[in-house]
Amino acid sequence: DIVMTQSPATQSVSPGERATLSCRASESINTNIAWYQHKPGQAPRLLIYDSSARATGVPARFSGSGSETEFTLTISNLQSEDFAVYYCQHYNAWPPYTFGQGTKLE
Amino acid sequence: EVQLVESGGALVQPGRSLRLSCTGAGFTFGDSAVTWVRQTPGKGLEWIGFIRSRSFGETTNYAASVQGRFTISRDDSQSTAYLEMSGLQVEDAGVYYCSRADYGQPLDEWGQGTHVAVSS
Image (cartoon, rainbow over all chains, first blue to last red; front, top):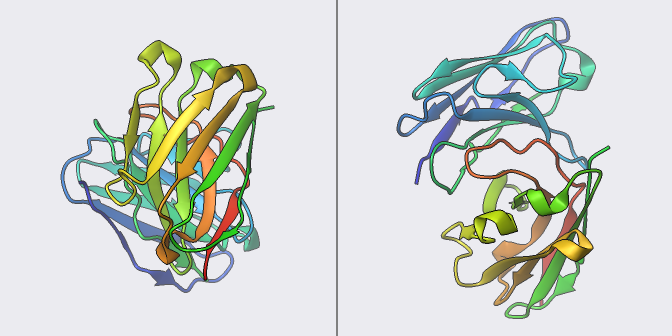
């Protein structure tokens, strides 16, 4: 199975700053990666798919990049509502479509 | 508006079985694959498995951690997918979400989740 490794586990940031979250795949997944935002008590929300495409309604301050095995989610001008846990997930070729362990923005 | 609603979560004893439901609305349920994901206490999200549409033979695929214990099925007449869980273990406790996604697709819509507790 493909292992998705996120770093850091926790990132301390302040509103207005930029956050850079990383995700590494154990083998090439091309650009078949999604990023999700998860807040307590809520359903996870798709932010980015195909490495860099924003999902419907996602603000432009969220951007994704990368290919093969190295990926980044960047959140510019952090807003208070952006403090959450972020997960990457691959959907390359065959299942299981594993998630990373998450990065918590605090 | 696309909606997915999970139900059936409960407190069960170790070794027992439980069936969760996922009912969809606002889209053609029968044309969509359904994926189950869980979040266990203190851990992140875990992909459990999915079932494809009838057009793709209702093919299923499972994570190794649940293979042989969990079964996903669907009833398109009810716009509902099911997650049948047997031999439940303490580590299976958590929030179970359903989503729609097929092979090679991201999970674009999610339900609010249903809670499963496993304790004697």
